[in-house]
Image (cartoon, rainbow, N blue to C red):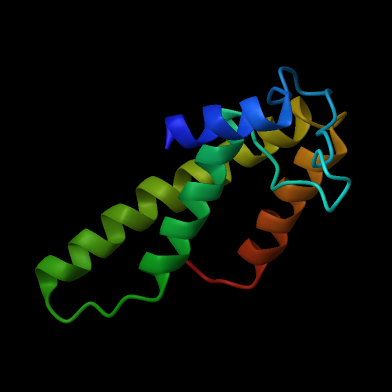
Length: 113
């Protein structure tokens, strides 16, 4: 994965954003911008959301599975709920990241966990 990213960066002549306020660059050929590259804490929030969503839809077919699901929901959904206000404050000046966080937050409202 890292080799692919390095190759893509070499081809584009660019580098990923280095700060919370640096804008993302458009593709070299002038087409649509490449998918955003988020800071690790924002990527973690997205990963937590995907895992939270996955486990919130799982069937607890026995007690062991119920415990596993509940633990995963507490870990991922709980962390996301705790971290979201901090992330929104940290990246409020970056419209691309703020939009991604708002998207996750909107989706969270549609799921009960």
